Image 1 (cartoon, protein in one colour):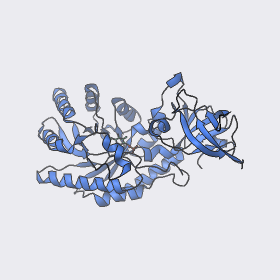
Image 2 (spheres, rainbow, N blue to C red):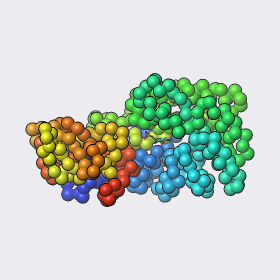
Image 3 (cartoon, protein in one colour):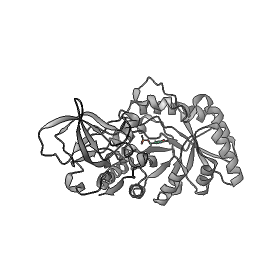
Image 4 (spheres, rainbow, N blue to C red):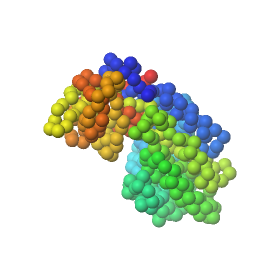
Length: 381
Ligand SMILES: *Cc1c(COP(=O)(O)O)cnc(C)c1O
């Protein structure tokens, strides 16, 4: 386990606790895997934009995938080179599009024909020729695999295949835009390779088709989505990047000089973070016991928002052999403020330190101040 009582005892809770050693090992593994390949990895800033983590990731040589103007600013301030930044999002405002051009980002992942027209106009006014990749909604059969069902129902993302010709033609012909790639992102927390293989086949079909009309894409961006092991972070602290990159490289028909871009978020930062909290009460309910933590859904919203489950551990009761079933909840006035139901944990008492594991991605970055709670601080080791 990468966290123990000694490391966190006495620290103010709730707290985001990050293991920089694990983050560095994860980044080293990625760099080892992609050495000598056409793969370029962009870190999806939205997974965790803690500036201290961003600096470590930028230093490892990754690019950045941003989804707002302020994420672009955060990326640049943390040392990501502007030309290694790509910018996706269905609702980029004029102000954000102009800021992206002014900062000289690598390329825009354009998500609609309307956005393409707007960027074209702004680029013409601005006298700058931005590079664009067209974000495609690949319409992979929703029943193919349940992992990507949510990705497909999110129809607001990307340009539908039926409108793709029109978008590509517009971008290709525009004197104000530099069409450089196709972009995809099929979903998140994908732990098997099948959906990525299906994506690769779709991409091959599209690149073949457009090659016939004389359009070559310098960049194929497959997005992110590689999952992590939430139930057993100690056995699998680093995701299987080798299999992931091998799957993409084996199944995609890349042409000479073509770059393969990946936008990984969760798989880079997920396992290096934990939420550390203290037990405020162990409450006897009717037929059940509640562990009430000082951390709540405002600190980690994934269980409430997605029904996600994170491994919960009592660090103070390591030597305790007696166990009990508990519902582990936060202090917030919402029933959804629950981290686990019927969790088997060592006999727990008020004041014990409880950690919620695998909270490095979509924890701190999704924090809110609901109930006027303060934003938890972070500690890096
Ligand atoms: C969120 C997002 C990612 C990262 O997804 P992960 O599941 O964290 O890897 C990548 N690309 C885009 C466009 C995204 O919106």
